[in-house]
Amino acid sequence: MIYTNELKFKYPKENTLSFKDISLLAGQQTLIKGVSGSGKTTLLHLLSGVLTPESGSIIINDIHLEQLSNQQKDRFRAKNIGIIFQRNLFIKSLSMLENMLLAQRIAGNNTDKEILEEILRELDISNLSGKIPHHLSQGEQQRFSIARALVNRPKVILADEPTSSLDDVNCVKFTELLKEVCEKFRVTLVIATHDSRLEQAFNHIVELNHKK
Ligand SMILES: Nc1ncnc2c1ncn2[C@@H]1O[C@H](COP(=O)(O)OP(=O)(O)OP(=O)(O)O)[C@@H](O)[C@H]1O
Image (cartoon, rainbow, N blue to C red; front, side, top):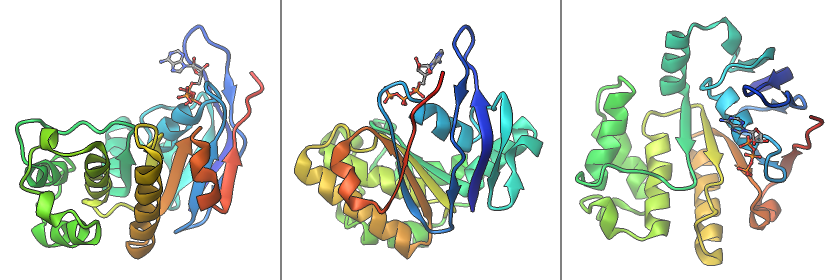
């Protein structure tokens, strides 16, 4: 489902980062771990097509990313990839429901309230969807970040340090919920983190350790 081959990336004036090959099956749930600076965020940006590798290849769902133009990559990302960050920014003046609908529109999709309602129900946040972001706890906002990543029915969710701002109880709840909905909606999940609290929840762990 996701394969990388001899992937290398170089930031200007920095040493080249070389990534070990990864091979993830459809529906698999994978933890990418590694010390700070080992390239976890860079790898997620490469997988989402936000960054372009210096060399090597990435194949997602039979599509070779290096063969796509920037515009095609943007479309591919919008259609296939949901992204969750450490802290999720929502438009402050919009309700959570409006934020979710906006995510559908930005991706160029028609708004689909039915799917959205199903996702919100599954995440047990339907009753919070009329609130503005500022009136939600960090844990509740992170649940909406899962919803937003799912609204366009992606094949893959890439999550970058999604639990760093959560306490232990919310970390466990968030991780269980994310795994559960990815399984239900048949989404391949890749989490990059140095949060060791997540390790026991994943069978498939890829460790990055760079030879610079
Ligand atoms: N925009 C940038 N310009 C130059 N160098 C960068 C840039 N972003 C990251 N780097 C460097 O690339 C390397 C990998 O960074 P990256 O953020 O991918 O690591 P990480 O494993 O996600 O780290 P962390 O756990 O601290 O978030 C680091 O040495 C970092 O300093």
